Length: 234
Image 1 (cartoon, rainbow, N blue to C red):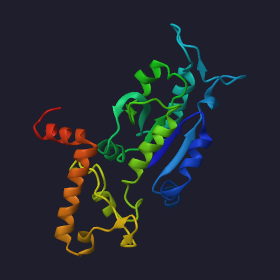
Image 2 (cartoon, helix red, strand yellow):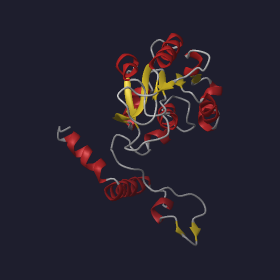
Image 3 (tube, rainbow, N blue to C red):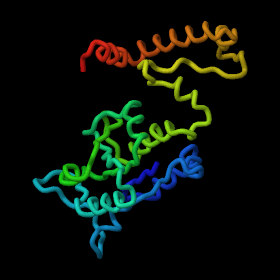
Image 4 (cartoon, rainbow, N blue to C red):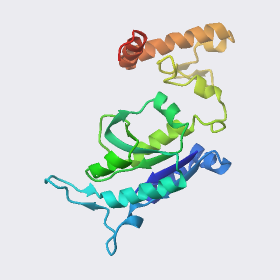
Protein backbone atom coordinates (compact mmCIF):
# COMPACT_ATOMS: atom_id res chain seq x y z
CA UNK A 1 0.00 0.00 0.00
CA UNK A 2 1.23 3.47 -0.90
CA UNK A 3 0.26 6.31 1.47
CA UNK A 4 0.95 9.95 0.64
CA UNK A 5 0.56 12.90 2.98
CA UNK A 6 0.06 16.37 1.54
CA UNK A 7 1.20 18.66 4.35
CA UNK A 8 3.17 21.81 5.04
CA UNK A 9 4.81 20.01 7.97
CA UNK A 10 6.58 17.05 6.32
CA UNK A 11 8.90 16.33 9.25
CA UNK A 12 5.91 15.79 11.54
CA UNK A 13 4.76 12.99 9.24
CA UNK A 14 8.18 11.44 8.74
CA UNK A 15 8.85 11.36 12.48
CA UNK A 16 5.51 9.77 13.35
CA UNK A 17 5.61 7.18 10.59
CA UNK A 18 9.17 6.09 11.39
CA UNK A 19 8.16 4.65 14.77
CA UNK A 20 6.51 1.46 16.03
CA UNK A 21 4.54 -0.76 13.64
CA UNK A 22 4.37 1.89 10.93
CA UNK A 23 8.15 1.97 10.82
CA UNK A 24 8.32 -1.82 10.71
CA UNK A 25 5.66 -1.96 8.00
CA UNK A 26 7.75 0.41 5.88
CA UNK A 27 10.89 -1.67 6.45
CA UNK A 28 9.07 -4.86 5.44
CA UNK A 29 7.65 -3.27 2.30
CA UNK A 30 4.02 -3.64 3.40
CA UNK A 31 3.55 0.12 3.04
CA UNK A 32 5.32 2.96 1.31
CA UNK A 33 4.89 6.40 2.85
CA UNK A 34 5.75 9.62 1.06
CA UNK A 35 5.19 13.31 1.70
CA UNK A 36 4.30 16.16 -0.66
CA UNK A 37 4.74 19.74 0.57
CA UNK A 38 2.39 22.29 -1.07
CA UNK A 39 5.07 24.96 -0.57
CA UNK A 40 7.08 23.18 -3.28
CA UNK A 41 4.29 24.13 -5.71
CA UNK A 42 3.72 27.69 -4.47
CA UNK A 43 4.93 30.80 -6.27
CA UNK A 44 8.23 32.49 -5.35
CA UNK A 45 9.57 34.49 -3.70
CA UNK A 46 7.46 33.85 -0.60
CA UNK A 47 5.97 30.44 -1.53
CA UNK A 48 2.70 31.31 0.17
CA UNK A 49 0.17 28.53 0.71
CA UNK A 50 -2.52 30.61 2.45
CA UNK A 51 -4.34 33.90 2.07
CA UNK A 52 -7.28 35.84 3.52
CA UNK A 53 -10.79 34.53 2.79
CA UNK A 54 -13.16 36.20 0.36
CA UNK A 55 -16.21 37.53 2.17
CA UNK A 56 -14.24 38.31 5.31
CA UNK A 57 -13.83 36.28 8.45
CA UNK A 58 -11.09 35.30 10.84
CA UNK A 59 -8.06 33.25 9.92
CA UNK A 60 -6.53 32.22 6.63
CA UNK A 61 -7.50 29.78 3.88
CA UNK A 62 -5.14 27.33 2.19
CA UNK A 63 -4.78 28.33 -1.44
CA UNK A 64 -6.22 26.16 -4.19
CA UNK A 65 -3.34 26.19 -6.68
CA UNK A 66 -0.55 24.73 -4.48
CA UNK A 67 -2.93 22.07 -3.13
CA UNK A 68 -4.24 21.09 -6.56
CA UNK A 69 -0.70 20.85 -7.92
CA UNK A 70 0.28 18.72 -4.90
CA UNK A 71 -2.64 16.37 -5.46
CA UNK A 72 -1.82 16.04 -9.17
CA UNK A 73 1.78 15.23 -8.27
CA UNK A 74 0.72 12.62 -5.72
CA UNK A 75 -1.75 11.04 -8.15
CA UNK A 76 0.95 10.79 -10.82
CA UNK A 77 2.87 8.45 -8.51
CA UNK A 78 -0.23 6.64 -7.26
CA UNK A 79 -2.88 6.76 -10.01
CA UNK A 80 -5.52 4.64 -8.29
CA UNK A 81 -5.28 6.26 -4.89
CA UNK A 82 -8.22 7.72 -3.01
CA UNK A 83 -7.75 11.38 -2.05
CA UNK A 84 -8.98 11.96 1.49
CA UNK A 85 -9.47 15.31 3.21
CA UNK A 86 -9.37 15.22 7.01
CA UNK A 87 -12.07 17.65 8.17
CA UNK A 88 -14.70 17.91 10.93
CA UNK A 89 -17.23 18.22 8.09
CA UNK A 90 -16.51 14.70 6.87
CA UNK A 91 -18.08 11.33 7.60
CA UNK A 92 -17.06 9.96 10.99
CA UNK A 93 -14.27 7.41 10.62
CA UNK A 94 -15.00 3.85 11.72
CA UNK A 95 -13.55 0.36 11.63
CA UNK A 96 -15.65 -0.42 8.57
CA UNK A 97 -14.21 2.58 6.76
CA UNK A 98 -10.72 1.46 7.78
CA UNK A 99 -11.40 -1.88 6.08
CA UNK A 100 -12.53 -0.12 2.91
CA UNK A 101 -9.50 2.18 2.93
CA UNK A 102 -7.15 -0.81 3.34
CA UNK A 103 -8.01 -1.92 -0.21
CA UNK A 104 -6.62 1.24 -1.83
CA UNK A 105 -3.59 3.48 -1.97
CA UNK A 106 -4.36 6.64 -0.02
CA UNK A 107 -3.54 10.34 -0.35
CA UNK A 108 -4.27 12.43 2.75
CA UNK A 109 -4.78 16.16 2.32
CA UNK A 110 -3.92 17.71 5.68
CA UNK A 111 -5.46 21.14 5.97
CA UNK A 112 -4.34 23.98 8.23
CA UNK A 113 -5.62 27.39 9.25
CA UNK A 114 -9.39 27.89 8.78
CA UNK A 115 -9.69 25.35 5.99
CA UNK A 116 -8.93 24.85 2.31
CA UNK A 117 -10.34 26.50 -0.80
CA UNK A 118 -13.71 24.91 -1.62
CA UNK A 119 -12.70 24.40 -5.25
CA UNK A 120 -10.16 21.81 -4.14
CA UNK A 121 -12.86 19.90 -2.27
CA UNK A 122 -15.26 19.98 -5.20
CA UNK A 123 -12.79 18.93 -7.89
CA UNK A 124 -10.00 16.87 -6.31
CA UNK A 125 -11.22 15.17 -3.11
CA UNK A 126 -12.73 11.66 -3.13
CA UNK A 127 -13.66 11.34 0.54
CA UNK A 128 -14.00 13.72 3.50
CA UNK A 129 -13.24 12.08 6.81
CA UNK A 130 -13.57 13.13 10.47
CA UNK A 131 -12.33 11.48 13.66
CA UNK A 132 -14.85 13.28 15.86
CA UNK A 133 -16.76 16.40 16.72
CA UNK A 134 -13.84 18.62 17.67
CA UNK A 135 -11.31 20.84 15.96
CA UNK A 136 -7.57 20.19 15.73
CA UNK A 137 -4.77 22.52 14.69
CA UNK A 138 -4.43 20.64 11.41
CA UNK A 139 -5.26 17.45 9.58
CA UNK A 140 -2.03 15.60 10.29
CA UNK A 141 -2.95 14.16 13.69
CA UNK A 142 -6.34 13.04 12.39
CA UNK A 143 -4.70 11.40 9.37
CA UNK A 144 -2.31 9.54 11.68
CA UNK A 145 -5.28 7.96 13.46
CA UNK A 146 -6.80 6.83 10.16
CA UNK A 147 -3.48 5.47 8.89
CA UNK A 148 -2.83 3.45 12.05
CA UNK A 149 -6.32 1.96 12.02
CA UNK A 150 -6.03 1.11 8.32
CA UNK A 151 -2.47 -0.16 8.08
CA UNK A 152 -2.85 -2.61 10.97
CA UNK A 153 -5.47 -4.45 8.87
CA UNK A 154 -2.95 -5.24 6.13
CA UNK A 155 -1.61 -8.81 6.01
CA UNK A 156 1.63 -9.24 7.92
CA UNK A 157 1.60 -5.88 9.71
CA UNK A 158 0.45 -7.30 13.05
CA UNK A 159 2.39 -10.21 14.46
CA UNK A 160 -0.79 -11.97 15.59
CA UNK A 161 -3.67 -11.84 13.10
CA UNK A 162 -5.99 -13.13 15.83
CA UNK A 163 -5.71 -9.71 17.45
CA UNK A 164 -7.74 -8.24 14.61
CA UNK A 165 -10.44 -10.88 14.94
CA UNK A 166 -10.92 -10.25 18.66
CA UNK A 167 -10.45 -6.48 18.87
CA UNK A 168 -12.82 -3.64 19.69
CA UNK A 169 -15.40 -2.51 17.12
CA UNK A 170 -15.56 -5.84 15.29
CA UNK A 171 -18.67 -7.01 13.41
CA UNK A 172 -20.56 -7.49 16.69
CA UNK A 173 -20.40 -3.76 17.40
CA UNK A 174 -19.23 -4.43 20.96
CA UNK A 175 -16.27 -3.02 22.84
CA UNK A 176 -13.40 -5.23 23.93
CA UNK A 177 -13.42 -7.34 27.10
CA UNK A 178 -10.97 -6.54 29.94
CA UNK A 179 -7.40 -7.81 29.51
CA UNK A 180 -5.11 -9.24 32.21
CA UNK A 181 -1.55 -10.54 32.34
CA UNK A 182 0.99 -11.72 34.95
CA UNK A 183 1.13 -11.72 37.92
CA UNK A 184 -2.16 -13.33 38.93
CA UNK A 185 -2.36 -11.39 42.21
CA UNK A 186 -1.66 -7.73 42.93
CA UNK A 187 -2.70 -5.45 45.81
CA UNK A 188 -5.03 -3.83 43.26
CA UNK A 189 -6.82 -7.10 42.54
CA UNK A 190 -6.61 -10.61 41.07
CA UNK A 191 -7.05 -12.01 37.58
CA UNK A 192 -10.63 -13.35 37.33
CA UNK A 193 -10.76 -17.07 38.09
CA UNK A 194 -12.53 -17.89 34.81
CA UNK A 195 -9.52 -16.65 32.82
CA UNK A 196 -7.30 -19.01 34.77
CA UNK A 197 -9.59 -22.01 34.26
CA UNK A 198 -8.44 -23.09 30.81
CA UNK A 199 -12.09 -23.70 29.89
CA UNK A 200 -12.36 -21.97 26.51
CA UNK A 201 -16.15 -22.14 26.40
CA UNK A 202 -16.52 -20.46 29.80
CA UNK A 203 -13.88 -17.89 28.90
CA UNK A 204 -15.68 -17.03 25.64
CA UNK A 205 -18.99 -16.67 27.50
CA UNK A 206 -17.36 -14.44 30.16
CA UNK A 207 -15.75 -12.23 27.53
CA UNK A 208 -19.03 -11.79 25.65
CA UNK A 209 -20.83 -10.93 28.88
CA UNK A 210 -18.16 -8.38 29.76
CA UNK A 211 -18.24 -6.85 26.28
CA UNK A 212 -22.00 -6.42 26.44
CA UNK A 213 -21.82 -4.87 29.91
CA UNK A 214 -18.98 -2.48 29.05
CA UNK A 215 -20.60 -1.40 25.78
CA UNK A 216 -23.94 -0.80 27.47
CA UNK A 217 -22.26 1.24 30.22
CA UNK A 218 -19.77 3.26 28.13
CA UNK A 219 -21.16 3.35 24.58
CA UNK A 220 -24.88 2.62 24.56
CA UNK A 221 -25.02 4.39 21.20
CA UNK A 222 -23.17 1.46 19.61
CA UNK A 223 -25.86 -0.96 20.74
CA UNK A 224 -28.59 1.33 19.43
CA UNK A 225 -26.76 1.67 16.12
CA UNK A 226 -26.43 -2.12 15.78
CA UNK A 227 -30.11 -2.61 16.60
CA UNK A 228 -31.11 -0.04 13.99
CA UNK A 229 -28.96 -1.77 11.37
CA UNK A 230 -30.55 -5.12 12.26
CA UNK A 231 -34.02 -3.60 11.95
CA UNK A 232 -33.20 -2.01 8.61
CA UNK A 233 -33.06 1.55 9.88
CA UNK A 234 -30.35 4.08 9.05
